[in-house]
Amino acid sequence: MKLLYALAQKKQKGKWQLNLLKLLLVVIVLVCLYTFLYLQHDATLTNLGERLQDSSWEHPLGTDHLGRDVLTRLLLGGQQTIGYSLFALLAALLVGIPIGLISGYKGGVVDRIFMRIADGFLAFPDTIVAIVLSGLLGPGIGNLMLAIVLVKWVNYARLVRSTVMIESKKDYILAARTNGLSSFSIIKKHMIPHIVGNVLVMASLDLGKIILLISSLSYIGLGAQPPVPEWGTMLNDSKSHFQSHPELMIYPGLAIVLVVLITNMLGDYWRDRFDVKKEMQG
Image (cartoon, helix red, strand yellow):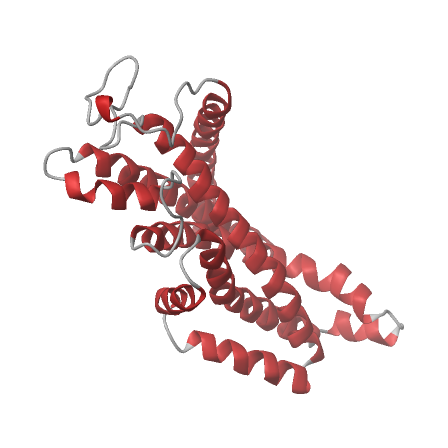
């Protein structure tokens, strides 16, 4: 009875999260459509005659210290920040998953080499390593994304490796090898389905961390460079006007918080969903 009650509670929680995520997804899609179809202002065009204006019909969120429309820069900045984060996450997955599969399945020298490299990256916090790499490579969003990929692939490689090592010792894998199934076929048919859930949960939770990392490093000048509209650079541009016009920092700050909350909720939803499946199977 306790198990059934727990499953029912998780189902209700998952349904609530899913409905909220669907609503937020619809809002994001509408915002993107508005960004592509209806924006009337140039996000990089300065107009000192309209600097620091309050909200109006022409400028719903006012203008910044260079007369640029804040709403336009906020929406386009979201495309920049979220787009860069998704690209960096995808690149980290494409690097980490194959390394984890090969390392966990083959073992031996290959596994030791990859894991010692991974241990070197894990010896320091992600943010510190990303700052050091970005500083060495030079400021710019391309170098920042490369630094993030070099930092993030490690977690996925170790996650996939541990899952593959556990599954490799099970009887059905031994039977597949005995029947002459190739290593590629074993990995494709038996290993990948077992890592999808764990990787999906980690990636959903990791997306918010990457967004924070890109925004924070852009804020200190190591990421996107002005006049590119990006949430971190918007925070940096507006810090000197915080006392007189705090909304210039509040808008991008709230946008970052909301997007990170959405990604964390998505990660919690996937985690609860896969936990329920495991309990039902047990």
